[in-house]
Each structure stands twice: as C-alpha cells, then as structure tokens.
Amino acid sequence: MTGAGAVAIANAEHYPWGDGCDGWHLLRGDDLSVIQERMPPGCSEQRHWHRSARQFFYVLAGEAVLELEGECHALVAGQGLHVPPGSAHQMRNDSSADVHFLVVSAPRSHGDRVAAPAPENGPA
Image (cartoon, rainbow, N blue to C red; front, side, top):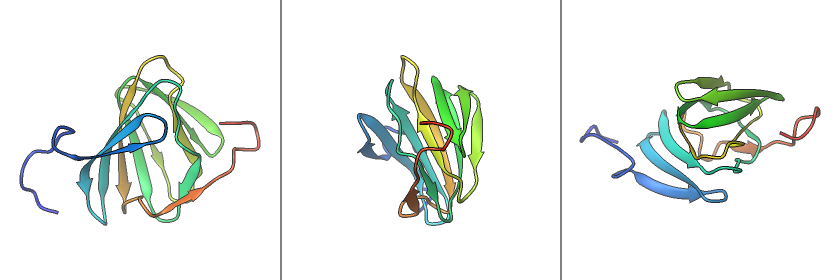
C-alpha cells in the first residue's frame, strides 16, 4: 500500500457482490479498509457480524437502512453509523434509487465475517 496518488472508483479495484451491487477498494490495508459501494433499489447484504473489524457506514447519495442489533436506522446522504465488532448488522436499500456509501473498517473486514440470523423481533 503506497500513497502514489489520488484514488477514485475510476481507478480503484472493483468487485461485484450480491444481486447487482458494486464495491471499489479505495484503500486496502490490513489495518484499515475504505470501500465505496453502490446498492441498487431493493437490494441488501446478508445479515452478519465481524469478529474483529470495527466499521463505519457513511451514505454519500441516496437513502439506506442499516439494521444494527435489531434496531433499524434510516440514513440519508451525509449521515453515518458506527458498527462495533461483534454487532450483527445488515445494510439494505428500501428506496427506489441507488444508494452510494462508504464502509470504513479497522482492521479490514474481508475474511472476518460471520453470518447472523434475523433478529428475533422480525426480519431485517
């Protein structure tokens, strides 16, 4: 990992995930990861938690719902939410437009993910 220049989704490593979602590694270090993601309407990630990674989800454009330990948080552009390690969560897009957001993880979250069941108070 070097500081060789500006990074954007145009020159970052891209990966598809889920049902039509996109991710771009803006910073990919073992101790810190910054990913920009795009989630189409009606999509969600699988509910999960991380053994070690602390995460911060920050909405750049659109509207998202981040379920955290059974509580749903509606987030719009300019808002974010901290997800501590060991906390079950799920990001989803219930709106009619794409949502673009950043996921900052320390340490990186890839390889640290554990599937979590839906919360007891109903599906997330």
